[in-house]
Image (cartoon, rainbow over all chains, first blue to last red):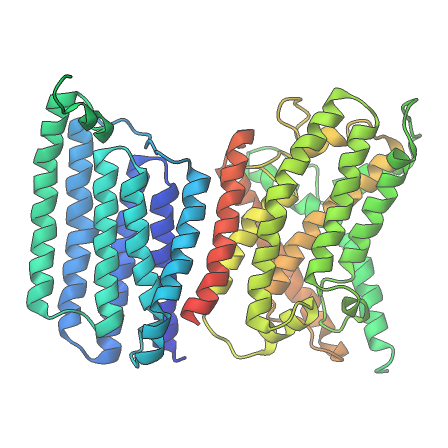
Length: 219
Length: 315
């Protein structure tokens, strides 16, 4: 393994670590920080892959990731949390050690799933595909096991991070147009989520999505 | 010369483990005092404590059985044995062939098991409580410890500690995410195993929070001296095991006896920084609630497993 691949593996490991950090973190500001860190590692990794593979459009993706996922999105979410005066502790559906074990199982599953692709691929980044898929799975797990709308959104964004990472490690990134589109979508989504949060809270006085079960006609 | 050198190294290491461990414990206490703005009792206070306790009479409870009297010697003995298995100064240890990493964990477990038995043996409420808590911590920290060590043995393709250290110290240098995860796990486990702050407080005698102290509350005189000494050695051994597995550069190679002074100097420097690091962790964290320990050790297990997995996935 050459040195760039080694550094990329370390970055992949850090992305995986932050994905697990998001699963076990109890405080909502901690979640935001971890999400920003994940974006930072992703951005560095993308830039590195762009440099090694001489794919210069990846530099733009990297800068886009840095701007959007490290600065803008955490800032928007932070403002939302402050405005909505959200309770600082995160409530989970399943307790944290169980979530961790489920997370480990998901990592093994994604390793098993991507093993054939790894055999076929010749890219520098082929070993990080499993990590990318695991990050997607862990984001999904986070969306399932959290009760609050804001933490579910962070899970969703972490999932998107995983998909982005998968694109970089499987095919050296999507075409630039697609990536710009996805970045814009994510930004718009964040705004829409913000408006949505305000509506949920006005209707239920809480951001607990369990409350939505009440949205049915009286029998 | 070549016949005697491993024996010489072993004797040197035996003496180092016995007599450097209290100094390391003293160093940790000293740095902690400085950081907390207190005046420290000096580097040699642990020696004075041990010497004082060795000269005192033993007070035994009426219903103490042989287990209670036997435990201090067993704890001391297994810890010293562990001390000549872990390569601290040189890789060339004759006794390291007798026990691999799994046996090493088992040695620490035997000591722990008997300490818990001795806590129960005397029949006081505190002893039983301490033993129960100690076993709770042990049941979660040992699997994580084994997983962390297995990660390193995967990298070096062996469970013999000497061989593991040799591969990492003298093999090709590769950035390995698996070892980084294993190191993280190892730090968390070492904090739990040696009873340092987020899990247990070595300085407390407050009844509600103590774990290790609760079990050995009834010991006195030379028994207490041996247990305290073994505790200091355990701290020293966990630190040096961490150094040997994750930062072994500078350890003397097999048969290279002239390199020993350099190895000793490097070890002292590493211990100097390890002590400061340990204190920084301890003063940065508050002691955890007992029911949070499962989360703490659960994350240690998670890191160790991730290390194991990332060996397969990323390397």
